[in-house]
Length: 379
Image (cartoon, rainbow, N blue to C red; front, side, top):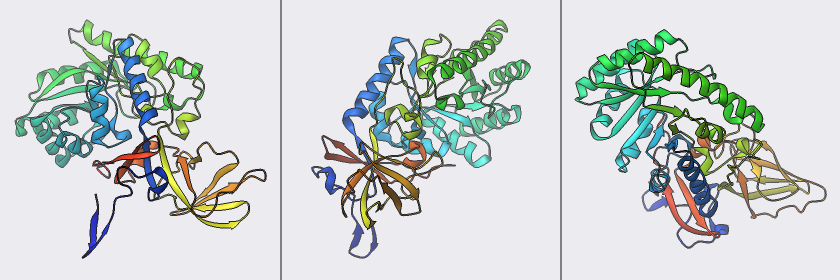
């Protein structure tokens, strides 16, 4: 992962196996294996208990090694959000990938056709013209791809919301070459961060009812609907138990973040923080203020700034490109110059996309650095 920029001078990796956590160069994204592995086991066990397949979403981490570990515990396959994002996973030997999105444009469709020749791929559609283009691209590539009609179950984003359109798209997918209709994409993103458990339960119940009604319509019309896929970290508790979904697409459960941490988690399904942004105190300009070396180029802030983990009296108060301003409460001990703090990102998905590698630790000792191979693959 090092890159030579001047002859004889290369950027070293942030850490080496065996390094103590305190010696990791910063800012660095750090994965604590003990809670990470517990999170993987908890979600897989929940899916198994309800006889639902787990298809974790790799947009959360963009890291093939993480996907391998999810698959080793029993996941059916993975999701990717973009065609290019799938490329490093296929290259890493992961060959069951659902593109949980519509794919539009000749370059993207051609790449999808190439991937479908060497891996089991599926993709969403919500438009007849796009479906025809998808069929043409698969035929030209000599490939076959599974198609899921995306239905809007309440988010108001992609997806059709009309019985006739759902039926027409499914029938079209049955009739066209190179594509095969297999079911429905029924994801509700907005529910994931509904704060109370009761609110999430009610929204999920309504989403499942809508998805089930479309599936019943298809079956009554003689069209098999074997897959209903959707769900996320905030809704998995209810989606798995609904009796409607056949797959869960949760991703952030493996890591957790500040936004998910703001949810109410008083049900049977709970997860721990396993992902941290390590940051060094680079300036101590005042008794009530220290400055960190991690800013917007190391973590995103659309869901708020990161939080200082497990340290009372320290508040990450302002974020700049390469600086983080931490306020120190009057009764708290201020960190010293050079001290290293653990931060919890507010949103893991785009934070992963800012880093080349993931420093993996157990008991505060570095075990490895995993490549975030799909970083920047957004086409």
